[in-house]
Amino acid sequence: MAIASGVKRTLTSELRDIERNKHTAECKAALQGNAGNDMSILQKQWNEVESRLRKFDYRHYTKRLQMEEDRSSRMLAWLVKGEQKRAPINAIRLDTDPSIIIKPADKGGPTVILSVAMYKDQCQCLLGDAHHYKRLSQDPTPDIQEEISFLVTRGMENDWITRPEAAFLTQSNQKIPYFCILPKIQKGKVPPPGRPIVSGIGSILEPLSQFCDVFLQPLVKQIPTYPKDTTDALVLLDSMPFDRNTELLITLDVESLYTNIPQEATLEVICELSENNRSDSRTPPEFILDLAHLAELLRI
Image 1: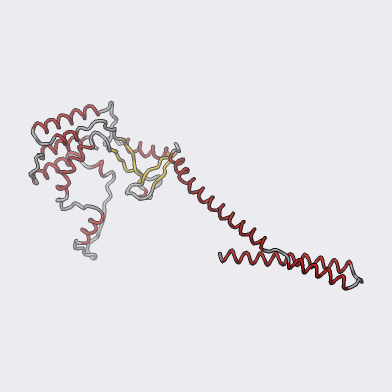
Image 2: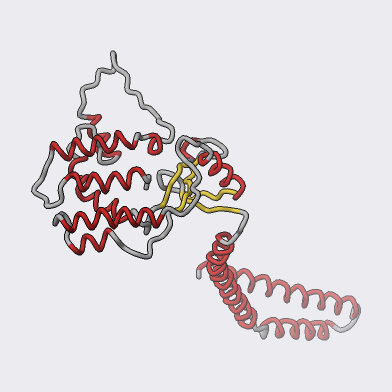
C-alpha cells in the first residue's frame, strides 16, 4: 500500500506539471499573439488558466491508477494459478512420453529420467550374464503352484501350519514377477549402471517369503555381524577399538552382491541357525527350510 500511495502521489504530481505546462504554453502563445494589447486582456486570460488548473480533477487519474493496479494483480494471480494447474499436466505428459523411462534412484532419493535406449542397454547387459540369468522356454507358474500345494498339504497333514496359514500360502490370482533396474547415480558414471531388481510383489512366491521372514528375522538378528541399518553399523564401528596410527578403516564394494550370494550356502546357514535355535513353534525348522529352498532357488 505504501508503494501504491507513493506511485499515486508521483503520478498526480506529474499530471499537475503536465497540465500546468500545457496552460503555460497557451499563455505564452496568447502573450505573443496579443503583443501590444491591453494588459487587462492578458490578465483575464491568465486568470482563466489558473481557474482551469484549480478545477482539474486529479482523483479521476488516481482512480484509474488503482483500477490498473487491481487489474495487474488479478492478471498475475491468474497467471500463477494457471502455471500451478499446468505443472501436473506437464508431469503427466512427461510420464506418457514413450521415449523415456522414469525410475527412482538406487538407495532412494532423487528420481531419474533415462532414455528408453539407455535403459534397455543396461538391462541387456545384465541379462546377458548367463551365469545368473537364463531364458525360460515356458511359464513356470503351474509347476511352482504344484510344488507349493504339495508342501502346504504336507504341513496341514502334520499340523505344522493352520488352515488360515495354508490359505495364505496358496493365494490365487498371482502376478508374474518382472525384471527392472534402478540407476546407481551415486557411482557418478554415465550412463549410470543399474541395480537388477526382480519385483515379486503380488507374485506366487511372495507369501512364502513373508511366511519365512517371520521365522528367520529373529535368527538373523542373533548373528554378531548383523547390522540393522546404516545407523546401527555406525554405532557398531564407534564401539570398536581403533588405533589410527597402526590401523586403517577400509570398505569393499561387491559387484552384483545379491545375485552373487551362493544360494545353496544360504540354505545351509538357515539350516544351521534353525537347528541351533529351535523354538516352541508348531512349525519345525525343516518345513521352513523347504519353503525357503523353494523361494531361494527360484530367486525371488
